[in-house]
Image (cartoon, rainbow, N blue to C red; front, side, top):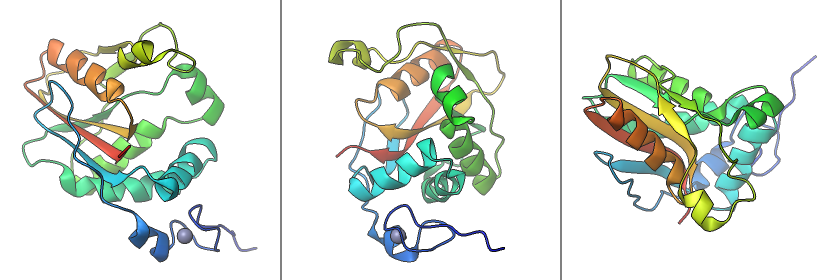
Length: 189
Ligand SMILES: [Zn+2]
């Protein structure tokens, strides 16, 4: 039996993102992440990007995450040694069965021939959902794990306030990273 799938952007039968939707993705606005060497996002978080990312995050479509990560990989700087990600909180990871950030980081790393390593850990703290804006801006509680790698690409799926990438960059820098580049698949325009 054939394994049937749809493009989550438009619903037409396709193995992954269809070519029309792939071409319909809009380049991201410029982003800034305090503490990072620089920050870049691949696509603008519009309705199409949202449909793809929701499918990747919540409907088990890891192929979509991999497709989006491929779009992001050309942005990885040559000086980078390793790719890591902002880990999902354990509740959403349990619910989905996977960490979308890890899939994005692994795909990006493979595309450019670098290792992907988990260098950040979530700390217990209030979840971001339901928090007020000030709470969300303070970002997730993350801690860096010890590593001798100091030139680090940090990836995330969607940048809204930038709190996750900022918190991750700060934790890596505090733990001794010399350079951190922040990359997001999508950014809210
Ligand atoms: Zn499509």
